[in-house]
Image 1: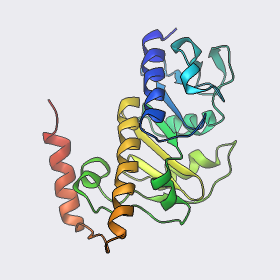
Image 2: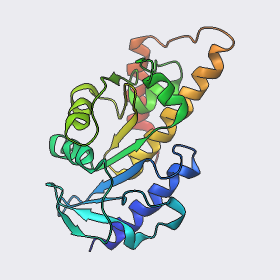
Image 3: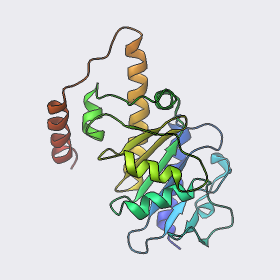
Amino acid sequence: MLEDLKKTTWKLNLELPKNNLITMTSGNVSARDPQTNLVVIKPSGIAYEDLQPEDMIVVNMEGEIIEGTYKPSVDTKTHLYVYRNRPDVHGVVHTHSPYATSFAVIGREIPPVTTVVCDIFGGPVPVGPYARIGGNEIGKAIVEHIGDSTAILLQNHGVFTIGKTAKEAVKAAVVVEDVAKIIHLAQQKGDPIVIPAEEVQREHEFYQTAYGQ
């Protein structure tokens, strides 16, 4: 079932440790199939180096396991809440990447101080409130506070990113961590210069219409 999507989701999950976005078994990538509305997500607590495509779990929008041997990620309810409330989203990523999460633990958004923030996020990466793990609280916080961005920080927790595809969501997760690291390094030298809002919008629109083939 959904063999191609399971293989894609497996490969994208492996991008998280490859890009230093997670430690041990934390973090996850999910993908929603646009035809069936079923969701493929990483199993809970399995080491990334041990994962295989057939280990990916298929669930429906109510969280019922349709196919899979293992338990799905403990963040499955969060992913499904986002999918149910954002029909445009077909990929969700969660990480605790250290530089971006350092902003989350002080409740501070990531400002648009590089053009890539304008390109990918269209403005500051917002920070949402603290929310309890295990239910719909985190998903609700994401939906209510992410706005038009493809990334959000949740206070005292970590990073969530979304995309039209899971690949786009993974790219956003990599970029938000890279930008947070750049800001951290810049702050050792002085105060980063924030790009004006009108230029952020212009840059974002240009990137969305001109970048790629």
